Image (cartoon, rainbow, N blue to C red; front, side, top):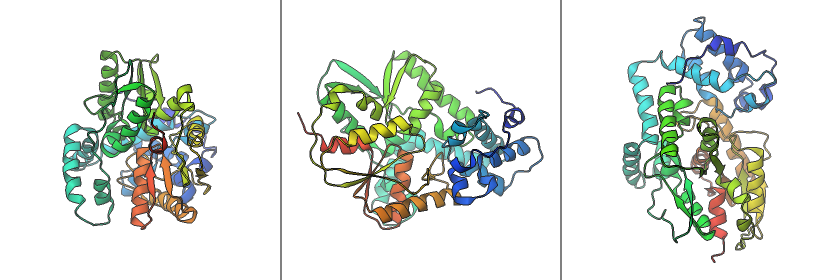
Length: 386
């Protein structure tokens, strides 16, 4: 269990300078102080000191934060905003009824445990025969399971992939694509035979004990299997791995960075792709990773690469906001969909599963016909076979 922290002490590190405001996506679309980092810090401090009671308004402002951490990155006082918001959510959760807490914990378990995946996969079969257009039915129809994640050839070199919980459930296409690309480089992949969750969903929902347990499972798996290198393919999971893996000597890379650093992949040949491809940058993606996405996709002949120029830095899906969005989160997604409607790309690529699912939901509910895939899937589709 993570040690308790003094919320008053770390909240007092914030000098209320306001430098975070223009970098906060929920403040961008709401212009509401309580939807800003310093506003949320004030709310958490007041709530922890008993000066503010639990309310639906407080829950809304704590919940809507997408966890992009842009505020923390630019803060001149180095305020640990992530600790404040996560612990603030946990403190609020303790005020909720047992039934509500049970439902929330069960919802996370559906996405992060084997039994939950089996149940959701079974429901997805039913959903595919129902043409209802709502978020839950669309999410169920987006579930993908595949038996084709096996290596196609033997190789001396092995590389471990940690697909995460939602990647295992919603992004089999990307996993298959990664295996195809690595097999082309004579690299065989190893994937855990059980779901390995990085703990981010539980952590950002205020379920810190649940997150701590999931993090310890991953660290135990890595140490007992003598893993010294692994890759991930969802930028949110990647950021979490970098924060919670205890073995600091362990080599971890996002698949995009791994491919960009591979001299052998840099000489690969690709089929022509005369399409307009809109490159979405998740909040959790580092600048160098975004540059690597552009670098890799530029290897494909005749491709036209586009980037969002709407001035909005987030799609609103961070944390659990994909499933339980607040008004600010909806406004962020609406802005992205409006931009997509104007630019009319053939394909959108995104390196984060939460962003991809959010964009797919927005696209389907507005009747657009645009494919949303991971960048490595487009690379695998266009790669010339040896």
